Each structure stands twice: as structure tokens, then as C-alpha cells.
Image 1: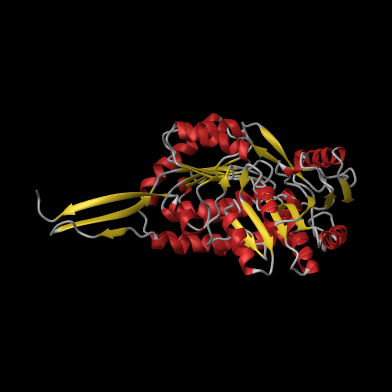
Image 2 (image 1 turned 135 degrees about the vertical axis):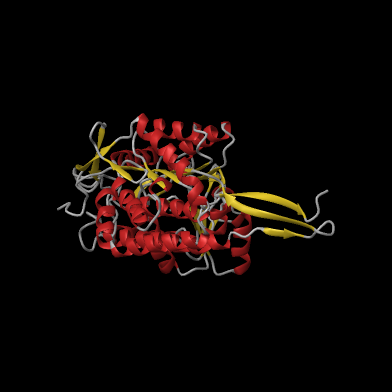
Length: 484
């Protein structure tokens, strides 16, 4: 498969300057469909990190004082450039992430939507006028940008997650130091390029790759950085949140999940199974909102499982650049080994492998849509976020029982239920411990809706006005027209 769309040179971006591999260590970027290198990524030096911090600090006064209307114009131009470059960007995303080309285009749809939403919402960062306590006294609140932001982005949706953080921070008037995943650098490079080509001052948006611990520790400890935004795993999020708290810095943490799906006995089993298979195996299950534990009422469990298994087996797995591919490879060898380990653990504890279960071939990181039944409660897959295309299906008898089982993990990002009873749906939404709840549907994260997990799934919100608000500091102003 040709990699003609992939950039021949990868680079850091600091104060508008692109810095290549010269004088820096490099890391290989691998196409997950082949397991072969497709690029060499320069790793930031200590000087690069210092320069990025200085650039964000020096650019902040001018960018923060730029009007929201001017910032909107720049962001809209960035969205237009991304749309113009869509064909190349989609191929780049597929080559380094692995997802099918159609899914890459879907992710770019959400990139453009997020940028346009933040561009418009930035003009609505209203304060409040308080009722006066006395004559000739005005009291109000004002929202002002919090300061330079350190933003950390994973590899599973590198374009959308980066765009959402960049657009919200820039719309609020903040400057940004972006640290994406080293597995998927080129798509973030091209996003940053679009923002800078659109008119974002170079120092207002900086891009670093390198040793994650080195960069995160230095950015979070720096007095320049006033806000942390991270999307990723619970263990890393816990570590970064601890580091931020030691500096008394606000942190938004969108962390992992282990979403239950509860299928009641009053639904169209075929339609629900189709919806579940489509959403479960999206991006090879490497989605924080992915349904990962299926609880099906005992009366419909046999029929649901049979249909689910048949649909899972029918999915076309292959290189994301090949037309007709419905599920690509896992992004990296770590996820492949994790999938194999979870399946083997469940099998050793008595689970039956109804579909898939073994690596496909020896080239690339392919693992098939896998279905497990008769899964023991002690199986690791019921307590650890799978982040792979493995679906355990269990039966239940009563509402109280299934709610207890669904809530029986330390995370609570997303949860889903399928039922035609309104009272049952309302009760599920009230009692389930999750921040993103779908009733009779699955919904990916949206530009205008807040996503924030319960329990260990995170702190604060991404998306919607709540997500934009995280980049502001609220000031109270009490002003008298008469000097006391």
C-alpha cells in the first residue's frame, strides 16, 4: 500500500517555526496495518520545551486581547482550510491510526464541527450583572482567558480530540502547547498547520512530540502554564492531575470508561444487535465511549447473542485504505497484546469464545471482532477497560440486579440502555453512574454537548459551553461611581 499522502518530513512547531529531525532523537511512526515504519518523528529537546513555553507566554497578551469576533474569523478560516485539505488529511489519519478511510472522514466532520462551534461560542462567554447593593454601585462578573494551556491528546481520535482542545482554548483567548501521541503525529501537525495558515499567531499554538514524562512534567511544573487538559487513561490522568494539584492548577481530565449496555426484554432484538455491533467495533473498540459490557435480559439473551455473533463475524476487517473495510487494525502492538491477554484470561475462567479470539495474520495489528459468552464475574475484562474489539455478553434477570452490576466498576464515563418503557428508561438515567448516557441510541461525543465522567472517569468537562468555560477565569468587579 502506497504512503504517498504521508508527509515526508515530520516536525515540531514552536513560535511558528517548524523544527525537523536535525540535532534531535527520532522515533519511528508505524502504519498499524503493516507494522512497518512510514515516518521518522523528531523528539523535543529540553530547549524545545523551554522555547515552546516562552512562545506561549509571550503570545498570550496579544492573543488574549484580540476580540472574540476576530478570533472567530481566524477559527472559521482554519475550519475552511481543513475542509479544503480533507482528502489528504483523511488518508494521513488512516495511515497512522488504522481506522477505515470512511471513519477518518467522519472524524474530520467532527473536527470541523468542533472548530466552528467554539468559534461561535467564544462570542457568548458572558458574565453577569448582579443586583446593586446601593445607589451608584455596579457589580458584575467577567470571564477572561485563564492563560497558556498544556493540552495532551491520545492516538485513538487524534484529530478530533486535538481540534476540540485547540479550538476551545484559542476561542477563549488562551495560548496552547499541544502534546499529541507519538503514534499519530502527522494529523496533528497538519491541524496545527491549518490553524497557523489561518492566522493564529505562531506563538499562540505550539506543538511538541517527545518523551511523554519529560514533556508533561516540565509543562505542568512551569509557572507559564495555567491550565491542564488531558484525554487518556485513568492511571496517566491520575498522575497528571496529582502533578497539577501540587501546582494548584486547574485540570480537565477526560479519562477511560467501561460502558455497560443494558438490553431489556421489550425491544426489537435484531435492530438493537445491529446498533450494538456497529458502535462496539467502531475504531476497533478503541473508543472511551465504546460499549464494553453487554447485559441482556435472560428472555432475549439467546436471540440477541446469536444475532450479535453473526453480525460481528460478517464485519470486513482489513487495511483502512482498502475500499469496503469496516474495521481496521488496532493502533499498536500494545493493544493487540492486551486483547489477547483479556481473551485468554476470560477463557481460562470458563468463558466461551463465540466469535474471533485470535490475531489475524502476522502483518499489522489485526484482531477480529470477538464475542465472549459465559463470562465469569472475576474475569479481568469486566473490570478493566478493554479498548479493543472484544465484547462480553452476560444475561440478567432483574432491574436492580443489572444496575448494581453495571455500576460495579470504578469508572463511569458512558452507559447505554435499550427499552421501550419510558419509566424504565427514566429510572436507568437516574440510577446509572455515568456522565454520558444513551437511551435507545449510541452517540459519539459532540461539539455542543458536555462530556464528563463520574468516579474515576475524569474531572471537569470537554465540549459544549461547559467545556469552553474551563478555559476562563471568572473575575468579580465591584465599581462605585463615587470614591468612598
